[in-house]
Length: 495
Ligand SMILES: [Ca+2]
Ligand SMILES: [Ca+2]
Image (cartoon, rainbow, N blue to C red; front, side):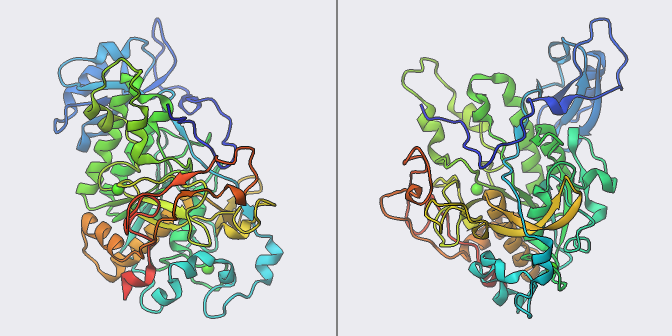
């Protein structure tokens, strides 16, 4: 049995699962009230939600958000028997999302000292900190910007932990009228609601996509486009399925052509295969992803930081010792890692400064579509120490001091936005491409990367008690499990 526990890059915030569900007020106390719990109630696909909404009311639930487009209601109820009482005509399935939040695999931020930012001169033709952006040379950004640096008609939804709207490198880049919080599955468009609170992850991601060319800090890949903050990560660092549903539907309804999803909802980690309760939850998220695609949104997702072979996960867990026959179709539909494994989503692995797979990056033939720089802090120092300069420099927001700045992070959370930024440039240069066309254009213009021979083992380069912790074997030819179709290329998509 494959070990499915995630190897995180850094300790995630140690809050209990479900902590994000604590809410106050709203419902009248019932005789035998249980905890206030969130549910997703699914109407049959294609049906409207009016019958389901009536059953919710009868079962003492409150609809807090109605996603009629996909037949999904977000409901809160203190009725301990809600799930059984709501079942009936007009309700296909119901599930509590309690405990189904997954932690943002955040990693640490290494900030650039303010004095160093002030002293930076960089390349005078670009930005003060540009000479630290090795990742941008790797994808041929200077050549691309000489042709096209993005159109303001392109709006990229950053489904993440919010974007700092006071950041000097981002303030002009945000489509405020298209930004929202989706925490709890309910939209809140006030500016404070979609600004960062406990995490600067989304601010870093947004900078990679679209930090301004303004003589300050860094450049993003597509500084001419707009980013919209769609906050789906709660203050405890968790993404709940109802927030993801809200985020995809929001992007679809607000004219976004792209979303970036640098997070990873992994039902396997939560034993989806043994828990039928979880299946409606993943169905709801998948309906939302499909709906966004039908509205012209291309979704880009990170492959994850677990060094998993995502293509062989299901096979590996189908142990012959398990006597319970599994319905493979249900498994593959219900237990995908979302959004990375959903059909039509562009999934991105990560490489370090040498172009080889980052030690942490998950991979998988048929799952990874392209690769991009995500950093590998352990690469150059041969296990002596981490080197933040081999991570990705972008915009930051210090949640303790509440100050904006610039700093380094690494992860597939950082490679994903490189692919998203290149896709935004592609759409700027070639408007009107549909999501499927844009995805194949991104792949066609990527620079193929060959598999390393044999077992790829970056461990000699890092300190570890387990010399095979990061072993991985690449499979495939020009298109392979580590790099998909290859490295995204900013110049190739605009020339
Ligand atoms: Ca700048
Ligand atoms: Ca894909």
